[in-house]
Amino acid sequence: ATPAAIMVGTGRAAELGVLFRKGEALEALSHIDMVLFDKTGTLTEGRPVLVGVHGPQPDEALRLAAALESASEHPLSRTIVDSARQRGMNPPVVEGFRAVPGFGVEGQVGGSRVCVGARRFLEQEGIPVDEDAMNEATGLENNGCTVVFVAVDLQLLGFLALADPIKPGAQEVVQALKARGLKVVMVTGDARRTAAALADKLLIEFHAEMLPQDKARVVVDLQNQGYRVGFVGDGINDAPALAHASVGIALASGTDIAMEAADVTLTRGDLRAVVTAFDAARQTLSNIR
Ligand code: ADP
Ligand code: MG
Image (cartoon, rainbow, N blue to C red; front, side, top):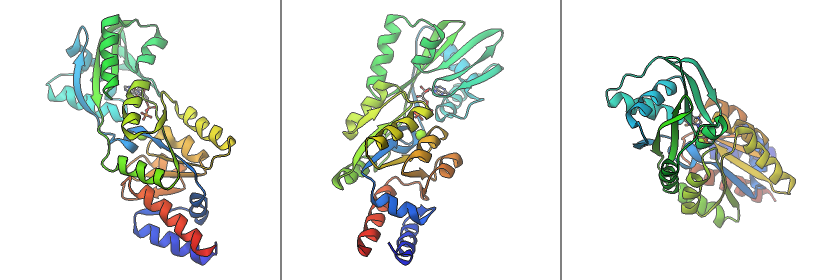
């Protein structure tokens, strides 16, 4: 590719909301054969809605979850805090707050230890979940909900079901990429069943319960198998994968850390620009061949 052709290609792409941070990224993108997508905030809106509160003490579960989440920046946190406020709840003061990335948050309330997060967080902490609660939570996950468990001093208080709608255009983007001969896979930190519900809708394969370093490892493993891997994401938890991918693509609607780790920014936060980016890359490179 001549430098002039690359300049024309990146210029045209920029007008369409695709910012290539270096000319090499345009060329690298034209060779990609596998695209990995983060789920939350990338394929979904990333603005979950609280759809139910369950378990033995649902109100107290929401109140304590809101107390812990007010110190967190996770996409689930704001919804939980706002939902408690809308119900006129007064979350108590938290001491010793700690975020456990990929698992949840914990802290002390009135001398008791409170844990809020994924099912595997409770498992890791040795907090039992009885069979009825487990079955109900499993049903919610099979419907695509993310379930956030709340425990106090090793006892399950309740669990919250949050639904994060799929982005308009997500289905279209997946189909368009497949039609161009690319393999599409979802990589998420969310629970396996929750991930499966969305992946089945999009007809793609997925990896679930991935910590940030796991997402990066998936990228590297695929590269070692000979794939040229693109990664599309928005979160801090995607930064290592974005950095390792042959081309990292970050949504401008996401975090600065993701954009810094990526080679390409979708400036309008519109997922459909992923297809625009590929087409711009392939057109530019084929023009010069
Ligand atoms: P994702 O790839 O879906 O953005 P994360 O790595 O951020 O995933 O989180 C993985 C899972 O850990 C979430 O789906 C959630 O179950 C749990 N989790 C992480 N942080 C929190 C939090 N602040 N509150 C509740 N649950 C959390
Ligand atoms: Mg995300």
